[in-house]
Length: 315
Image 1 (spheres, rainbow, N blue to C red):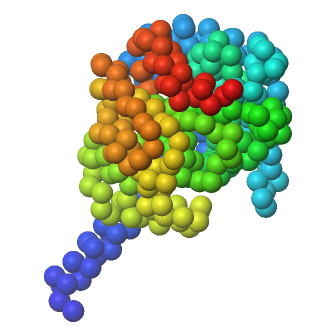
Image 2: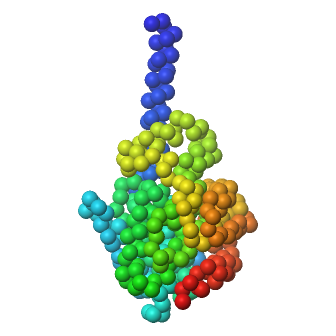
Image 3: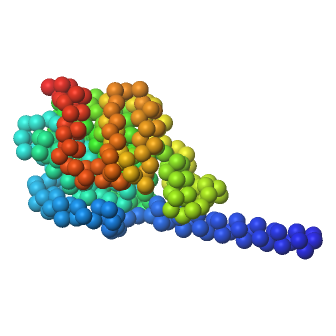
């Protein structure tokens, strides 16, 4: 072997090892358990006072702590159920939180639906909040956990339960992925605010725009690590593919200036389903800002969707 060949092999081996080490770093950073909710983005700091008012409401409101144990695990999944002001109502909303959040971080949406007369379930997804798990599944395994939560809702509220699935960011993609599963007839419609189309597209986008890195070799390596740790490749995690099986009315909401999950993904998800659907691109809103930029209009748009696709079924 010539000197040039040996040098080439050393460079190649070094690059391969470096790529794997960095991919392992990416996996741990992006997929590792969340023990503390990170500080919000700069553009949403101006809403902090209102946010903490909602959190204070959440902490004070009467609620029930629900759990179930994952198969083969000793640790439990956690959620909080807030009974509606009217104990006779059968309306329930399941609110799915965003990446590195938890149920408490959705307190503003919980208050909105509480004021609309709903019972509310706020799960903590895997590796978030009080729930078990070492790794974030970006909605893929969470969608199966939500089937357990739906069963518990029906047991608590009764067979007459009328359920809305609502999510923001990762939570939006979670309910979109859940829409492709066999859901109980009590689930009537979905609302998805700024969900990604797939982890493939989202991770590729972030590698380019946040790290200025190409998709290859990092995405395949992270996907392989994920398969080793969680049992599936990242290519399996697709809201778009799940939405192709969806039969329920769905309302897509997305910020026009979202630089974390580009609004083009909302259009892909919208086009993927043949069910009754609506799309609202919120002018000037960044990622997960659509509610905060104009809470009154947000509630009006959600209420209009519910009036069209939910309330007439919830009789």
